[in-house]
Image (cartoon, rainbow, N blue to C red; front, side, top):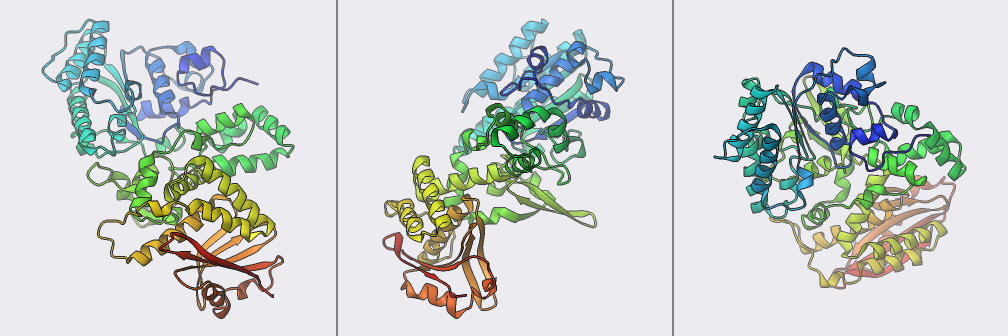
Length: 531
C-alpha cells in the first residue's frame, strides 16, 4: 500500500518518493492539445498548486517523472523542454501590501537566471521584457500563475487595499495579450479561488479559455468515485476494518461526508485534501472545519440578515458565475468560489441554463452550520460544540429540558450585542428578532444531522420546525413575546400533527417562547400528542 501524499504539492517529490498519485495526465494532455491560454478557479485545498507543479515539470522536459503515466504511455507528447516561469502568489504571505515590490523582485530573479535585462519603467513592462527576452534568446515561454487572487481576497474587509493590489495585478497581467500575439508564449495557466471579471484584471485577453465550468476541467482536479475505487482500495479496506463495517457501507459514509463537489453534476468529486486526511488518520473527521472559515463570510451572513437555509437550493443563472467584483461582493458567489456551495443540478431551457446550488457534502454543511452558530450566538467554538452535543442527546433521549437548557446557554449574553440590520431593511424590530431566533433553532437542529424540515406548509398554516430522531418526532412552534400557551394551541388548532397520525414513534408538540427584551427563551412547554 503506497504512502499518501498528504500536504504535498510538488509533483517531483511525490513521484521520487513513490507516493500515491492519481493520474490526471490524460486531462492535462487534452488541455495542451486543444489550446494554450487557460484560467481555472477552484476552492482551496483542491489541488491547484499540484496541477501547476505537474505542468512545470512536464514543460521542463522531465519525461522520467511521467514514466508509466497516461501522457507518456498513450499519447504522442514529445516532452520538449521550454523555459518555465512560475509565480506562486500564495507564497508571498498573508495580506501583502508591497505586492509591486515583491513581483518586481520575482521578475528580476528570473531575469538574472536567464541573463535578461528588463525594462523597469513599470511592472507590466518588466514582465513583457523578461518574457520577450527569454523567448528570443531561448524558446517560447511557459507562464504559470498560481493563486493569482490571494492579494485581493486577503483584503475583502479592507476594500481600499484590495483595490490597490488589484491595480498592481492589472499592470502585471497587461502584457499577456501582446506577448501571446507576438508568439512569445507557449502556454499560460492561471489559477485562483475567485473569478474576477476579465475586464478588471486580464485586460482584453479575450482568447483566455475559462475552464471554471468547461468540460475540460470536469475532473481535472478532485477525485472521482472511479478514481477512489481504483487508487485507494487498500485504504478503504483499512477504514472498513477500523470501523468494523462492510466495505460497501463504509463507501456510502465516505461519499456522504466527502463527495459532492461538482462543476458538472454528472461528475461529483471528492476534495483531495479531505480524502487524503481521512485515509491518513483512518477515521472520519471534519477536516474542512479544521482549515478555518473566513470570519468575513459568516459575519456577513449574520449582519446582512440572510437566512442560511437560502443556500440549500439556490437557483442562479449562468451570468452568476461571471459577476464577482470588489464593488459588488455577492455572498452566494463567495460561498460558491470558496467551496461552501457547489452545483447540485442544472436545468437546460433551450439555449439557457438554470443552476441549482447547495452544500456539496456533510463535512462542508456541518462546517458551515457550526461557524454560523458561533457567529449568530457570539460564542466560541468549544461552547458551541459542548452545547450542541448535549442538545442532540436531549432530543435523542426525549429530554426536551436538556435541549432548552443548552439553547439558553447559546443565547446568553446576546443582550450585550446589537443585532445589526441590513441597510434599507424594512422589517420591524419584531420581525428581525423573530427571524433571528428561528435561524438559531434551524442552525442547531440542522447541524446535528437529524432529519429537519423548517417552515412546513400545512393546509391550515405553517409549522415552524419538524425534527425527527431515531425514536421521536418533534413538532415545534416558536413565539416571540407571546404566552407559551399560544404555541401548542396553534399546533393543535391548525392540525399540524394530523399528517403524523400513523407515525410509529411518539410525537411531541413543543412550544418555545422567546423574549425580545431578554433576548433568550422566556418559557417553553412540551406535550406528548395522543395519536
